Length: 278
Image (cartoon, one colour):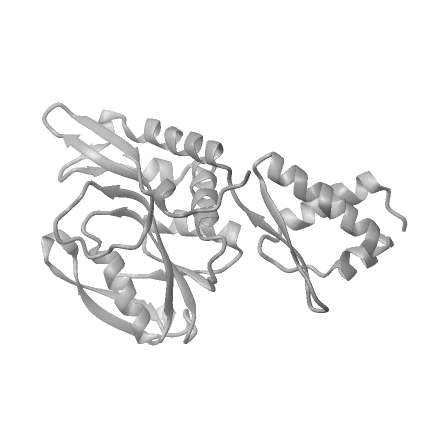
């Protein structure tokens, strides 16, 4: 069956969007549409320019016999700022304030549209990193990890507070829970993470960073490598923070529990040496 160019462009766009970060040989598209590689290359140029112009991402070309093209989701700086500003508006409502300066975020974590924005922002931040898997702690980090995973096209590994019979043999470690200085434990199934994996660690809220530091220590038990740390909200500067190198979308800069006022600002997202779309 011979495809018209308009049909090729639509189908090719859909195929790439469904498979981010997956290398697709030009011969695949050539055989799929019964078209010459030169025509496919021209089509891909149109898709690339449209993706970049509309803030969807980019299409990268990998040369050589084993090469091809892959769609890499990214944002431009203006889109990123708008997304982060929208998150601030949602989270600054006074009825979200919980004892201890924490924020109620469960409803936002269950909002698929907002999670898509969070996922795309953090996936864009780590788009050039070599990542095999995303790790988070149950339960609030799971929606964020899944959202990022959908753009990076990698699996999610969930660390739990206690072992479950359905997960088989596990690895368990103890860690210090940040500012409270309590000793807690976290558990990961031996089957869930391959030895030597490159891991992106994700958390919904970081105070002193004890939980994230615990996950970093857990990676050592699997001879895994830390590729990056992504955080939705970080608290304001805390003495003795256990994590330094991370990317955050928002910063909880001030909390007035008496007047129930919450002040959020941009995190360090724009200071993280990111490469944005033109």
